[in-house]
Image (tube, rainbow, N blue to C red):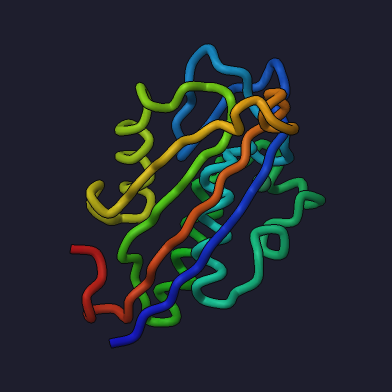
Length: 165
Ligand code: MG
């Protein structure tokens, strides 16, 4: 049985006046993130984890921030592109574990909504998607509330050999 693992990390700075999107879900009343696309730091980390698992470079190579096509783009498109590469190589997603690090917003009330949204994008059961959150306990740029960091790990299995179930 053939498996691949990938990890991704992304960081975005908060920017007032933009909506906050995480896992494709807009969180009402929260300060958004700066970025060329919709700045969905969670989906960017997941995209890089998937690309990493199939050794297909990184999100910046596939979707350059200099390309006007991706201005304010829905980052779901980045994940779906990475999933096409996964399918091309004969793999499928088994599970995804995502961690978001920041002082705000409090993610616990939104966790299951974000899990459901990410599970739908990845086309796996919600039980195969984990979202964790932590703070930096006031230390450094995260502690000062300057932005969010997300890190993701995904496991792929050869299709039909124990993928999502
Ligand atoms: Mg990013």
